[in-house]
Amino acid sequence: MGSIDYSSVIETLQKKIKEIMEKEEICGLAIALVDKNDIIWSEGFGFTDYKTKEKITADTLFSTQSMGKTITATCFMIMASKGMISLDDQLRKFYPEFDINTKFGDKNKEIEKITFRRMLGHQAGFTHEAPVGNNFDDNPCTMKEHIESINGTWLRSEVGTELAYSNLGYDLTAYVLSKIKKKSYSEVVKEELFKPLGIKVATLDITEALEHSFARGHTGEFERPTVQVPMLGAGGVYISVNEQAKFAMLHLNNGKINGKQLISKELYEEMYKPQFEEEGIKSPFGLGIYKEDEAFSHGGGGYGYLTQQTWMPKNEIAVIVFTNSMHHKSEQVKIGRKALELMHKEKTKPKVIKIESKKLKKLTGTYYRQRVNMQNIVLEENKLVCYDEYGKKTILYTQDELEFLTETGSKITFELDEHQKAKYLKWKNEKYFFKVKYNDSLDEQFGPNEKEWEKCVGIYQYLMYGTYYYAALGVFNGYLYYYNTTKMKLEKHAENHYFTADGESLEFKNNEVRFGNVSYTKIDLNFDDLLAEYKSNEHKKHTYKRPIMSLVGILYWKNGFKEAYEFLLKTIEANDFFKINLMTFGNLLYFYRDIKNAKICFEKLNAIDENNEKVEEMLERIDKELK
Image (tube, rainbow, N blue to C red; front, side, top):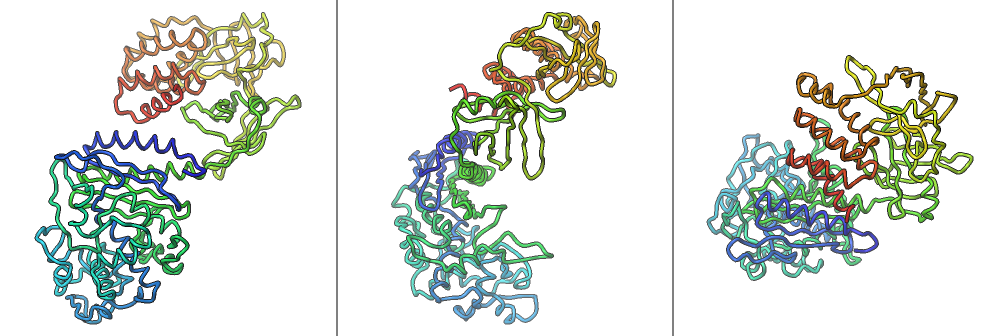
């Protein structure tokens, strides 16, 4: 696997693929992850067919359907690099008998405009299918018969004026390449492309393909007919993911393989350029290639197969996914994109500089500022990890003792006070900047635990928009805290006057607290009365959601998980709507690294609310952490 460890990517994909195959009832699938020099991982799943139940491997041949268009375009570029043909040559230069009808003016003038660039770029004005040997015709025919049947058909648009995906341009290109070489197109592909790449088993002949492990196409459990398709240029290749990986490497190496430039640099670049523009918008189609954001791709579908190759030349990675079922929801595309995303994430992780654990340890703790999520910085496996209140986990990659980077490029810088203790952290990226101040840490020494705090400890309520909300004052590790869901340590300024880390003032007088200039009143709560209120006021359920979560947090910090969890379940019994707080409580516990109890919350919510992707994601993450 080289210097980059993709093991977690592979593990994630193996699990995901098995889940998708079971859910979508996919017969078989093969996948390969590729970099510019090697296959990182390849594996087969499921069966070649339902009758024999032969297991698919990474060497099993699939019909790749329209993925073959990229192979045809590549063969063209190889031969063009040798001077045998040019992108802007007219089709009739090599196939003078070609004839087609048009309603757009003079027929011969239109035909003269049909070049290989326009055929490979889907702008030659062709319809999609030929009359003989098309996707709707299983009768055997030769490639020559298929090509000749195009003569006399009609253009669907004026040549060069519209983008219209078509098989015909690729089949005509393949036919011309075979005429130039005076060999079958199958022989041309083997000689010009497969042999230089070391591809030995792949073929365009169904008879040859069936001599090897071969995945038969399906729709559901129905096995599609296995026939020799004459559409060799548009989609006639039978190949395994292991051999397709060698083809992908050619494109990841800018048209060069084993030190030899098979495709000239100029023509390689031309393949990737948008070939059509309409009203200022460039088409995503290059030549045999489709552009999607930072990646390129081409897929195929038909005769019971759905296939996809997606690659990023800039990052030198590719993913190939073949399936021998075509009833599913384009899972080959989704798996390919997800795999490429995970590979890209792994490959572009910031480099890490090793720092002593004790130097990192002094940066751990919670950081807080008004209207910014509280951040919990934790040391895990000699790496700093940041958690927020919503379940988000961010690894901080060490650049020096006080500077870190995230996978998305954010820069985190810590600043220390005169005692070399954490003071605050700055979080900066292209979109925003915030500075959060140090709040507390599990490693702090026991505080002063002043006796005067006893009179102010308890639960308080405050009124907002006609509804009572709750907070509490309590002592933890010898320090006074203001808390509901999260805890904010209070620093004494004067008698009965305190400040939070981010500078908010709290004053205590008799049974009242003024926090941030808002009055809070100390109360004795009757939780049974509250539950009755929540049950009888359906129209206020949205109003009650936050106060309930505040009480859950208060009970957790005051009396422990069991009491908080039981109260939360009672609110759900009162009104099923409040199950949403299981997610909030689970995220809070995960944030504070009480992951066993967080799991209890997520498992309960999963039982109540099935198919919640966020819950499933959190459970999967927690299970990994608990191993």
